[in-house]
Image 1 (cartoon, rainbow, N blue to C red):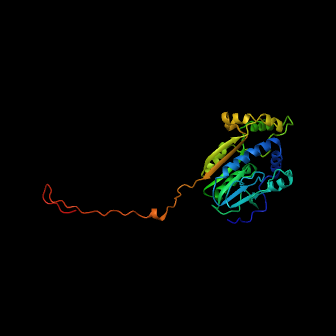
Image 2 (cartoon, one colour):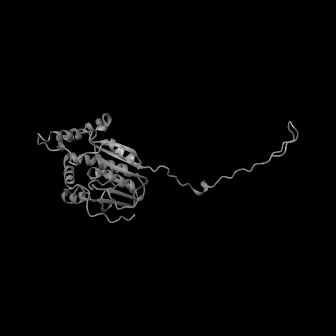
Length: 284
């Protein structure tokens, strides 16, 4: 489908985007980014169709392992900031494989039921109206289309530290550990939103169980915590990854023509009884 012309204004909050991209340059941000990229590569590789869209966050190549012929990367204010603020490291390339376009998550420039896959890496956390953004995703997805969501888990060691710093920030000058993007959307609330829009959650994964430390050296020292956390307290991961499929109730699948034809009904044969208890019986 050919995208319509997107609006000139952007619905992303620029100050929060600056904080988010700066945080992804830190050691915890790179740690989370690597886990999310691995989840994306594994999840979208076997999702088939014709049209795929990633909304925001070009640092995560959410469609690089997907084989759909038509791919788009919807860019907002986060793309403009990431182009100027990302480190120019020759060993790391964030160049998107998909065709870029300007679009707002609350008003996607695609017709109804035109996309097979939509990837949302932290898009709902940055949107000024995440409910509307999720409704737009439901509108543009075809029946049985899939949405992939990556977000920060508020019920984690990282989220609890963020909450503590916010509560004590009036008396202390300790900086926030996570990016200041307002209120994070937990998995339970995300499930409720998706259920209201007739989505069925297929996969939920949690990851990044290391303590909320800032240096790469200490994060590496706590690498042994990841396998333990995945086994014993999986819902306390710093990030979560979710795949949901759009269900359309009452949808009827088409069958081949040779199956849809009516079966011939055998003709009834009249049977005559020669005699009965009260004399001869008439033929039926």
